[in-house]
Image 1 (tube, rainbow, N blue to C red):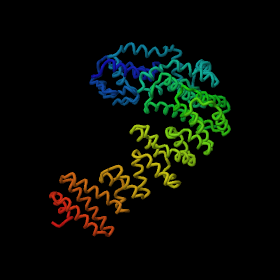
Image 2: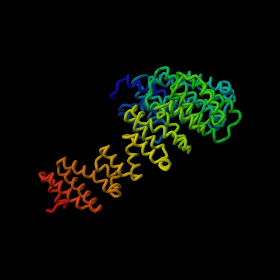
Image 3: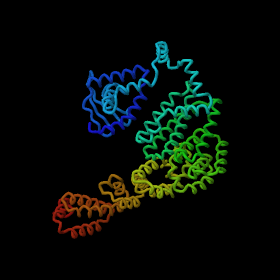
Image 4: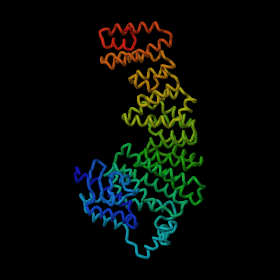
Length: 544
């Protein structure tokens, strides 16, 4: 194993916590995995252990030999050739083999077992009964739930505070590359405290994920932890969980008992809005999500517009995003235009949410308004991104647009939009021009991008040659010169092939006299290249 002990220790710490969080010391299945894994480890049945970056491969000599791969970043994505589809004894044994190099396995097991107290025989028998009947809960547990979580939104929020204090959030700063997994594990632990009643669970899920979005972001901002684009997927996960909760809530009409909770959430969006410590991007995502999906009453939205218009502005970007969001929801596009001017280039960065929601929701006029305003700001926005980010953004942007509808609505706008995103939009623009039969523009695009003829033939050159052959001539002219200038036998053969294409085009357009002029010119220009002249004779361009 060619890896330093300190590096291995840094990688195993979050992995260890992840495993301990996944395996419940009170469940027989988890106990078996740990005890059998420990036995395999102590019998030295783990071999050929290789550590490469974040992957570990190993072999375990069990009753049937197995091979496995451990993922140090995401342990639950590890693989083993045994039939077990969960964390298995072979993975456990390999983990112990690695952990033994940086700590004591016996201490790890002791810490794992100390996560909960052993149950008495009476309690164990009741637990066994509850496992068979998942709907059952002890009366004492139900009383404790009411006592700890409470029966009001304010008590829920305080309960979340107590749960978060138990979490080691410093790990987010020390191991930022594990942020996704760490946040998912925290969310799982929060969800274990969800209410027993089925109809209350989605509301609890919505509350918990909203709370975690705000508080984790606040923690990261205070620690000045800079997030990469990949680490922002942590917020995507939390928003996905919020969306899942809202979908479950929307299946049935919400009971009146939910009203104070919804009102509390609405109040929290205002509290979050006024925070100068939370990041603008997180506030914008969560705020827009809740006001789009949950707070749908027009009177609420009008009141929110009034509040935003009258409030003292602390975060100008967020204020404009929130105000524009309300205008778009109310379809007040005149007022929206004023805010768009205030946002400037930042409109593009925040457009993702709106484009997805309004086009998928078939609110095309609002979506069209956004596209028109994004267009003029797109080039300046792309200049702020590196090549990878710009390519990713443009691919997503083009994919989310309803191209058929836009083409019918304003094809010139589509052309202008794709043109403004070059070179990142090349393939989309290339396809658009072929579909629109804008062959002259297509030829100009190829000159701009400098692709080879072989590549262009797969991107529409055949269509151009068939539908507007005279426009394809400049491409083949250039291809002939480029091939001949390489001065080797294969390139001469390629040049002859392109010359035959030119001859075919002239015959098709009934301009064979021009072909004769062109052929004479080429043969005269390259008369000293005997190999090229020979290939022309073989290709029957000239007489033998």
